[in-house]
Length: 68
Image (cartoon, rainbow, N blue to C red; front, side, top):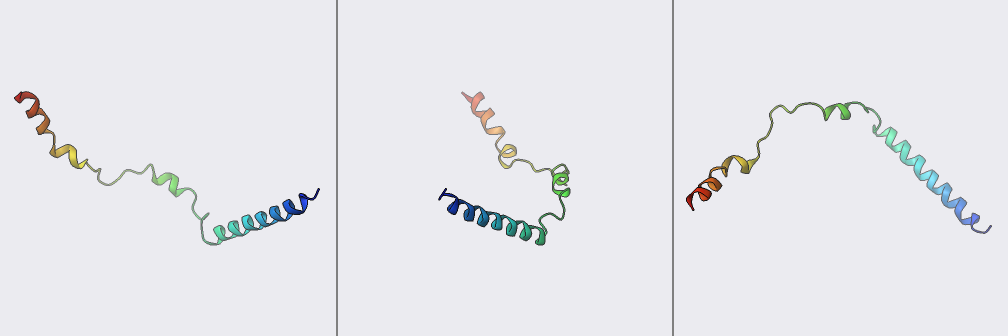
């Protein structure tokens, strides 16, 4: 039963921390827009990127294979 004298205050402190964290998140705007981030991942990029090494090194391996 003495353990309750330790566990109850610890749980109340953790509850207080959780409430303060939730209030901070609401006031700082963390929950303002929940839909846009999930839609942004589906949007196409304006211009697709090409790999840097793929375009410049394509001829070298073929010449080495046929030379020997």
